[in-house]
Length: 268
Image 1 (cartoon, rainbow, N blue to C red):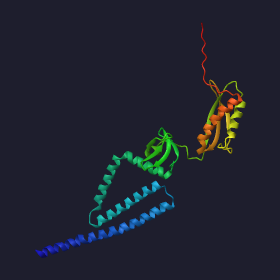
Image 2 (image 1 turned 30 degrees about the vertical axis):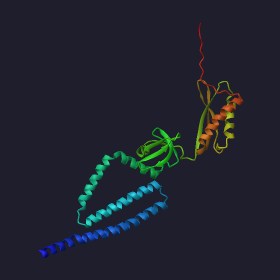
Image 3 (image 1 turned 90 degrees about the vertical axis):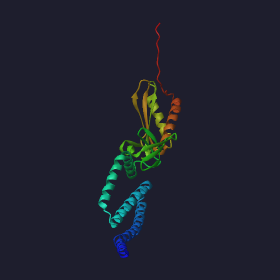
Image 4 (image 1 turned 30 degrees about the horizontal axis):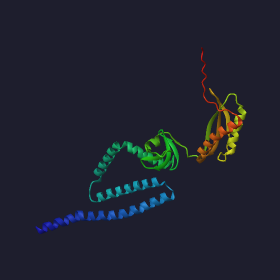
């Protein structure tokens, strides 16, 4: 009986003990190799100045793939059939993919946004009917702060597939304002006043053309378009200053700013 038990244990050791030992050795070596590979990946992304969000995402993906491969190698060493395991893993992945279609779309959108950078943190953007300053770009959503300090969360799937306007992308912007003057006013004088307003502001770029021309004969006024260029951060300063100065200078020059009026005639 003892001989039978000894032989049985010897057979178990030969069949499974060495396989288990090999599996442990492969795990130790594999873990060491993966750690070195991840250091190389992180170093490469740091050298290429990859976006920090994308860096973390790629680190996680590569690390998961390497450990998945190591796990398959280990179970194969132990004598477990990997074909059925891979089939089950694929079926599970497919089922999870169908269940999380929306999340996967946002995930893919986040990857595209991080790769192609249509906007960055600090940019003022408008999309999906809302606008605000980008405060955080996550893998599934982008966080905005509105000008009145409300937090907006927009799924990245929408941002990557729909029209998006980035007001901060270019270094300069054009300020467009339409001013109305009376039909009885001197148009050349009104235009000259607006040109002088543009020339007097330091934040308006003098290297770009100042455009002041009649654009429309409206019901109550002749409209003059005022177009000047400035650095993007100065946009609202130029806009508000031009609006204020136009009223002051028009009053000084005796130029009226008409508003809608209604004449009522009463018959006795």
